Image (cartoon, rainbow, N blue to C red; front, side):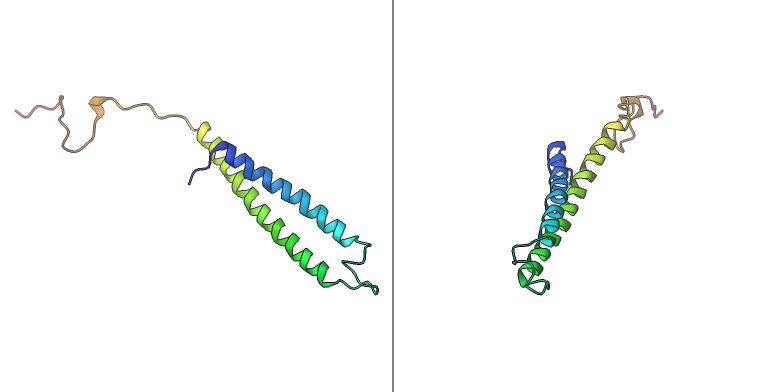
Length: 106
């Protein structure tokens, strides 16, 4: 499967956005003082564990999606850097069964 340049850039941007958003979210969750993430003793609550699992899952999926976008861009760059092979002339036609004007049977 070949990704277009705009799709590859979108996937890469999504991956970078995921790193920024979800790492910031986990930092804020860890420093939560509202009483939702940690109880009065300081132990993590179910709210903390559920949101941490969501953040880690989203972070991992964003990383995979960003890696797919990066691979798509690298593939497109590699294709544009490859030299284009010259067209073959009719004299060099190697197709079996094709008439050969240079050959004489007699």
